[in-house]
Amino acid sequence: MLLPARLDPAYRDTAWQRLGARPFDVLVVGGGVTGTGAALDAATRGLSVALLEARDFASGTSSRSSKLFHGGLRYLEQFNFGLVREALHERELMLTRIAPHLVKPVSFLYPLTHRFWERPYVSAGMTLYDSMGGARSVPRHRHLTRGGALRLAPALKRTALTGALLYYDAQADDARHTLTVARTAATYGATVLSSAAVVSLDRAGERIVGARVRDIETGEEVDVRASVVVNCTGVWTDEIQTLAGGRGRFHVRASKGVHIVVPRDRINSETGMILRTETSVLFVIPWNTHWIVGTTDTDWRLHKAHPAASRADIDYILDHVNEVLAVPLTHDDIQGVYAGLRPLLAGESETSSQLSREHAVARPQPGLISIAGGKYTTYRVMAADAIDAAVQDVGGAQPPSVTEHIPLVGAEGYHAMVNQVVRLAKSADLPVWRMQGLLDRYGSMTEELLAMADEEPSLLEPLEGAAEYLRAEVAYAATHEGALHLDDVLARRTRISIETPDRGTESARAAAELVGRALNWDAERIDNEVEAYAARVEAERRSQQQPGDQEADAARIAAPDTRRVAVGRALG
Image (cartoon, rainbow, N blue to C red):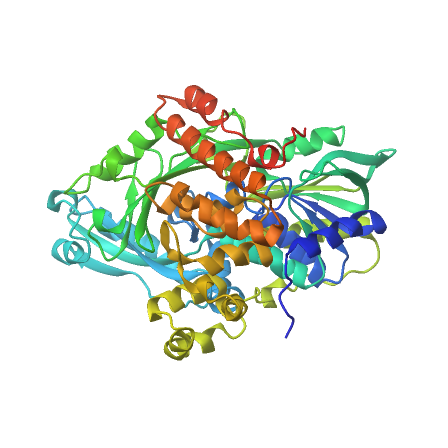
């Protein structure tokens, strides 16, 4: 069994030195789920590959999704059967082979509001949904009377439905999943680096032959040579194409999706829910001790690094979910809010909700591949298609993708550990529920996390201000998972930033001290990280009080950039 790569400071130093030391077959730009998937695909074909992310892994779209692995019921109405079939196949692979420790089944209630025609119509669609994608490890849909639906979801108004259907999909912590894909790629030999920004692309005539890369942490720059550059930057696709000096084969439009997070006791239900709106659907998604409710779907043409949720976005979500809830949600119930940008392939006149969720791969010039569109669930297929296109520039006969057969790190041995969860909990002197939570975040890597407490038992104590997480998880984020800043830990390695009423500010000092020990921060650096994080939270709160996008964006970008403030430099 391969030992999972340890993304610690020593790894990062070595990886940086590798960038300029030799040419790579493939240089992947963008550390979201598609980019990390492409790096894993290339590495497991035997290609040499480097993956560069300007900020943190999953810091863009891939940490701000609805956190679902699903086919997408609404795409059936658009007759996009190929996309649904493909996505359901990928859902099954994740549940059974690739990431069973991270991807879990989840049920949804579909309320019916029309007495006669709606049930056979929706049931026909769900029957088709159940039959697509081949083998399945989740139950088929079933019919419920109004009384049966209300027993499962007492939170619903009796007048909000005439009956319901219950169906199943799957969910995952998107940020942790993306990070695990990156770590798996490194395990198979990929060189992966965050805080490494491409500042220019190198050309030999019309061919792209590499990139100039800046270390955001130090300001150092290096030239990286590669046979092909794969642009996996999502909503930044057009910007990378501009660096190449040309126009791309497609244009990417950013669509903003906002979600709110509320405590579990605010919605009395044993299942998630999917609600129709005038333009799309609204999900109420179980999320540990919380619910995630969203999403919106609106064009975004402002600051891409920090999409801002406005009060109008939040009001839209509350208004629609409250149409069916017996006890309405209020602004005071909201503990977290996050906004992300979907990279949609732009058409001439469609609204964002009408744009295709299929992906496209283009070779706009020799040595450059761009991929965009798609949905989180189909990341593995997107990655394989990108590398299939890239091998033309690598040359020679190259093997096909094998990622369908590659479990992510933490998957191997997971099921056996779940069977032993009581013994493991007793051995670590932890409650069974906490041990199960660790297994569902780290899989079999839980063992190396717990081993950190052998010399420091206090690491098995809850983190101050966020008792659902252990102090060991914060330390592990820095010693094994490539976290370089406090925000990386509170917003992505954990989800403290959206799961606590204070949005992580009460945990910030304790977490920064734990990360600081691993990364050799002095007292000033710890103070800078804590202050920058607090300013970020405050800027987000201000944006969410603003009436519209323009005002919210202005409030949000006022937050200091942790990757600049904390190191005391203003790097471009």
